[in-house]
Image (cartoon, rainbow, N blue to C red; front, top):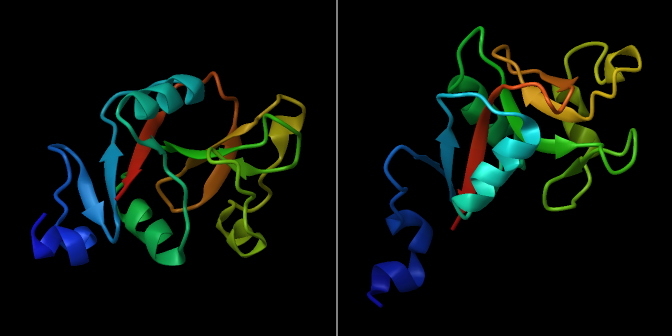
Amino acid sequence: MNICNKLFKFTCMKCPPGWQRFEKSCYFFSTSTKSWPDAKQFCMDQKSGLVIVNTEEEQTFLSNHITEPHVYWLGLSDSAKEGEWRWVDGSPLSVSFRRFWFPGEPNNGVGLEEDCVHLRSDGNWNDAICSLTHYWICEQKY
């Protein structure tokens, strides 16, 4: 292992073709649509996961890479327990990140079981029915 890999792995790491690097992760912005469960499986098959937003800078990076009218699945869901938003790694949604919700969201679609979250082109989050097909973002940490 050279010194670059030993000491500065995140600086030297190259993302796979078609992925974009930001800080210590590589991101895949899909060009087709899938349901949330299928998008989650796609990411897992790529040895990654649906994106988990950890910082405001990461949220900005993601928002800057999507265009209207597209929306992209995030790795956030309350399917295990209604109203308890958790990321795909099981961690809870930080209270400070609730400001990213679109005004009036999450609203569960007035009883429609909107349990999965997508990122809108305006940078806000919305809860949606998981079986709907949207674009998605995978994140591979290194």
